Length: 389
Ligand code: FAD
Image 1: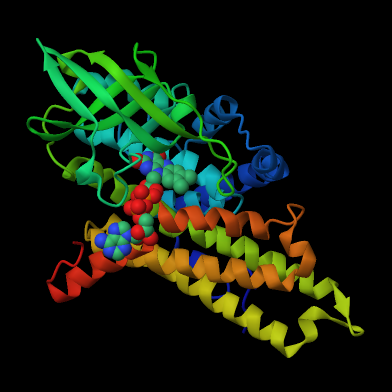
Image 2: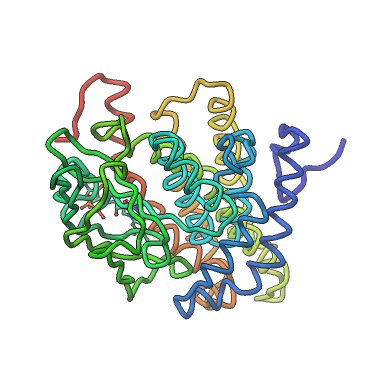
């Protein structure tokens, strides 16, 4: 019998279809050649060549890859999950770029937009010629988006939008913003071209996490839009939550990549680094840590595969995604923190990927529903009692 592969110990990828494996290989190669050599620099300087990367991601075919039509690839959810994993193996910020474009902005337009919205934006977004962002969070409305203050009011047949969105990925580089706002008729979504007068998107500085990602404030100061800018049918939080569920799906798969990179870095390092006349990997305490990492990475990988298959067979419930996001982000953070200790002082350096991943995962723990929100959601599912307020 063959001994297990240290990179995929439980041989989880053998469960993938051939096309899913081809996509994995293509994204992995792109990530290795085009992203990995630069990501430390992008992170250190807090600058991402977003325009250039968008076109390259478009060519790779990862923007909205799981959507159908309008220039999107229409792959399985499993293939999308694997692509997210391979991108996040390099950096959570790069996976965020792809999730926000595909699962939040494009998905919102694809699912809730008018035919005109879809035809105008989706082909360009799939190709990476147009960048999208998704504005739900506000300075005073995070976990409780229903308390948002951004308002859209009528002026004749036009809409006027006023308010502020906060922590919006890709905001400053976006061509189009999907903005959620209160109306007399509940929360509605609006397609806002970012060159509309009254719209601005200052970048948020001083982040210590997700530095290889653009994060912005959106300021809407009397932004006038035609009637047709609103999503025609959807009302209430169901609109944004549909999209968030898909983006969270990308996260629960993505973080497996971050965890894998941290584990492999720790393995490689401890095999070479010697103290007390032996490689660190020869100490029992080190092997215990590596074994725990193998367990966590593989358990997370299996969980991601199961959630992917639930999605591909039309059985996915948002609580499945809550279990996956909660479990896998926690696992990835545990792996990253443990790997950090094994690298000793080098563990705190950007010369190694571990602390960058660890810092990024603090964002991943918080965005798209904090760990506590997902716990409450699972708690409600198994007790029937909502404990959110
Ligand atoms: P809060 O809601 O204030 O929560 C603070 C703490 O209180 C958390 O631990 C939370 O779990 C806890 N808490 C809150 N309510 C309860 C409760 N009822 N019971 C127990 N504990 C509770 N948003 C977007 O709309 N679009 C984006 O593109 C986007 N990108 C982001 C990128 C980055 C880098 C970051 C950091 C955030 C991004 N976000 C985005 C925002 C993100 O989704 C929010 O930060 C998140 O929803 C949490 O909201 P908050 O930060 O206001 O925290």
